[in-house]
Image (cartoon, rainbow, N blue to C red; front, top):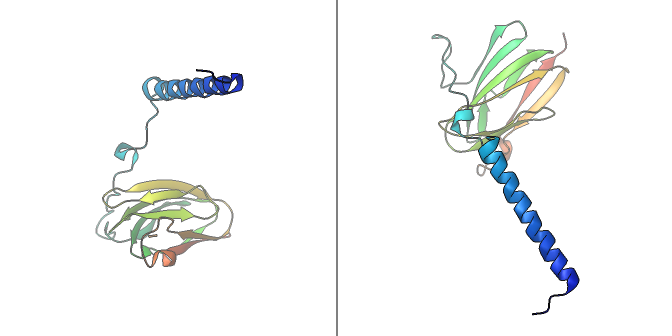
Length: 158
Ligand code: CUA
């Protein structure tokens, strides 16, 4: 069977790339230990801090000056709490859990972007240096009211 010279070269190139990718996958999975994120990478649900804080409700608590912890609940179609006020320079750790179906949690102009599952608590920490308003939204389609699922973090100037 006659194969054109250029076609043969492209077949070789494509075949060679497949071998390279397969090698890269094999090396990263078995020798570098790179895996897809699993349950082991998620935080465990945040423990209630005494009777004052109910794990099943959203809350914000100050751990130390400039250090905050947020227990956030996502459900159709709202976040609780949906407005958080902190002073500029604060480091906030978000623990977020869904009460029903899969949601998303993305804070604009930050690196915080999480998938939110029922029965798993996702975690992210961020330091809000610049004062201003940081809107957050659900970025996983979750039904008729998906586009209403939002809130904001108000970072107040010191
Ligand atoms: Cu919740 Cu989209």
